[in-house]
Length: 556
Image (tube, rainbow, N blue to C red):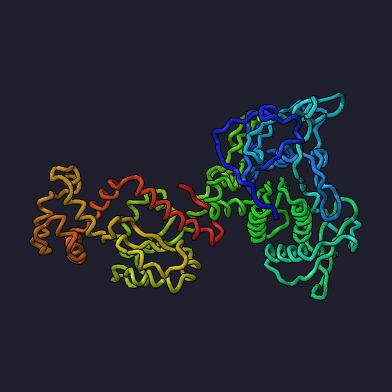
């Protein structure tokens, strides 16, 4: 497999035509990767661009938003001599992707922006001209050196799913895979379908469009005549993977509606496989999809890859277009936008009907949690501090909650719940919890109990701070209570930091209503970065809990 070309990313670097870098012909340009296409005018679109990820690119949106056509524009202006396992040229002609209308399609123009192996940023224009009664594709122009670039590309459309029963396909014993390719196909099949029942595959073709592989060998319980459309889909895609691997110099593989005929779990599995395959073979894989399941999985589990443009989702927004249908193409949009456009509902709507349960230690922790999260997030969850039906019980100790996460994680996962521990829980106390997404902690920089933290907060304020008016208690009264009721003397910050949290808890119980007001004020005064970090960690836990039930992701 080829070594991946090292490219220094520089978003501010300008693009120039090939002549700027001294290339006389498009065929001379050593292409490393395609960065984007800029659509100057194509059908109803103008002034739009589609960005490509380093490894995976998704184009998603409603039916009729030209997803397949736009992917065809990406794949077209390239030529190559590579052939697939059946000896068929890898290159897909534009006419095999879509047909331009003589009546409605006019002259169009778009720019292909790419990076060379020398880290040169090159941009060339592709025009679609009307000549008589036909359309002609013009890359760069009509002069010497113009024309298609040399780069491995392939467009795999839904014709791959034409049912075998409607074809004259049969096994082709003269077409074979190498032993290594056979093993890779077995692994591919097993990875996507979580199956280990196959030891061999034979090529299947009707000498037209059908090109796939069917099970064979002593372990086989059926042959190509009985494979499902999902299995047919996988075999057909593998044929393209083999072609790129044999060529060994990167390229672009475009697959239309990758999820077609695949179970939701298989959809996620094939995406994970293709991502790793794209990395190993330095190929950019471009996919169209309507699958909310795939989109949700990417946002939940590939956040880092999205941030680093390893993966890019281009969402064609139907709602953000006027009557001219110049759809906005949004790169890596908020998940909520994608969800709303694909389902016509908000992710919060369904989550509110299946609220996750959040377990905390006691009523004080519950109040602090609500103060930190705000009304909107609290509307998506239920907060509990008792793990039994005893109403007299004032809460659940941190030891019980940690034990639950450490030794009974399935109980949490299967009940759509997670745990929020107090801020006094130290790192070494949670080392034994393997799944870090089933718990988080209230924020505290010094690992203090809530009661101790609030007293420190109050005593560090100036006596005339408006907060004391809001809670209806002077700072001197607080100090008096600490001396007389809690035997904390002197009642200062230094003493509070030194003593046991139990003494601080005694003061908090003198007037629980006032103490909760103090918590509310403290949370309001916390730095924004502290609150945002906690909310982010909390939402990771909430979204993972919801994902286990197949519920949509929520974004802040």
